[in-house]
Image (cartoon, rainbow, N blue to C red; front, side, top):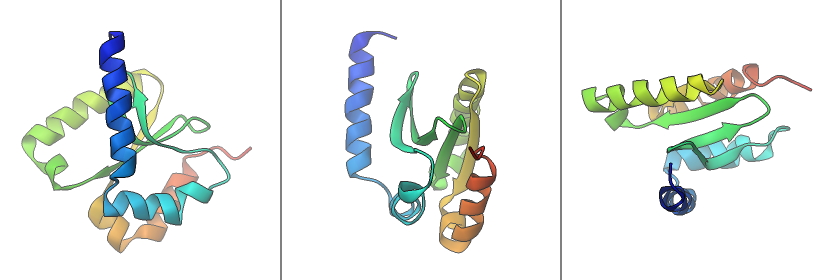
Length: 117
């Protein structure tokens, strides 16, 4: 990837951090921000911007709105997830509905995927 597109992605990531969805804000401020491990928001990895990234667990956390459940979104996610897995990363996907209805369960699942030091 060339330098220009990387700079553009970095700029896009900054914008996304400032304009998180309601569900992303909930997960960030009510759980991930104060976790005992470092989590980055809207992290550029290759030619993608992931919602959350935890280097300690080699973990990508994605929150999916309705567009991810349409055919085009599902195909794009499959390609994206395959790329991220090729880097040795684990991708966890949660629907916005899961964040709303089972927040504690989502948090426990994330914790289960991060190795404790």
